[in-house]
Length: 499
Image 1 (cartoon, rainbow, N blue to C red):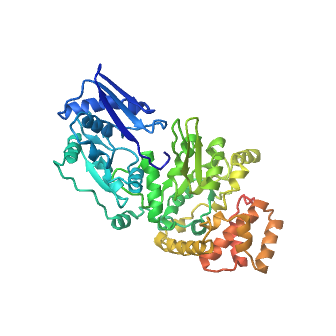
Image 2: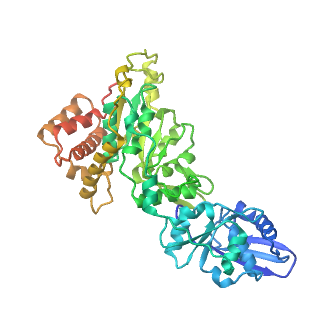
Image 3: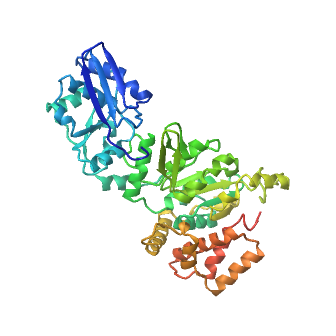
């Protein structure tokens, strides 16, 4: 339910009467169809299927059951009720798996949350498909028994076959998988944009990149996760649970150990973005949890799709309510977006002439609402790259060097907000901004000039102070100085009406 598992008791009763197979306990389609898979698997593994009235109850009966993981426990229950298996040992294990018609066991969704549930209960261990064993073994304190077929599990429960519990070296796995395939060093030029992304990563600020086509906005965004602080084990576990429940965990990966990067297409629906369906599944905002959600060509997204982002950006969770249930998924992500300065994309480009009418430009920008822009702290202009920068063999800094500075700044923030629910500068409320961001006299004068002369909005004032606090943290400076304010003002391109 959501990303947390709960125990379902599978009860089987075999009674005299006309042959019948009934499943009760609010089963949905895939669970109802399991009777055909169970019948064929039991016969094809050499066991006798009872020609009697079979009733399967899935308790608690008032919660809807979905998925194919009930195939294996139902078949084991039928074999136990028929006298092939001792009942006592079954109460010690959680059993999960989808059956093939020949008795082979196929992988299922949600192995990691199930292992966490077993650890927190008084059960001995977890029996599940071999393909899911590494994923479940990430949770310490649980005996994870991998099985490949119905015959395997029957022999194991009868004591005729020994199957060693799957064990995994978490620290070694974490280190080997914690590698990114891309690096910020790959990007030629755009040093001021890299600096802005460093500030965004250090304070957890949302960012918007504005520039002509082909200036490297997507390339820069894809490399942002490489400069974010390393994923902690608890964060990795929570992120992996979401992918496990959604069924999108990579086949050869048992743990998500790098920060996720999600880039949905602009044709996505609101249900696809925040999650949904008759029985709600995680959406892109949840799959981006502890990572980056990148919206390329922001104005091209439907207005109703962009508006549903406001709640998860503010709260770090998304609640999906349906008639049958209400589920909350975590959605604590960094929003990074890109857009062209105008519909044709060449406003302000020295090499191309813009063909857009001013009214058309205004209409294009109005597709992104004020309340959404209000939640984006940093606006960066991304100009075309010059040949001299493209031909430079050396390039800029590597992601690892930048990540070191970002982690130092994050540690300062964690110490500053110790004992509160705030983890980064971007989450500061006005009360904390007033307490922790006190510009010096020169900084206050500069801020006053910026507000009056550049026509900055009231919402920009708060954002400038938060970003200035982050810039000061990157320098290891407790006071916020005038040059911190000056740099933060530069990151309000849309408010300054620079285009």
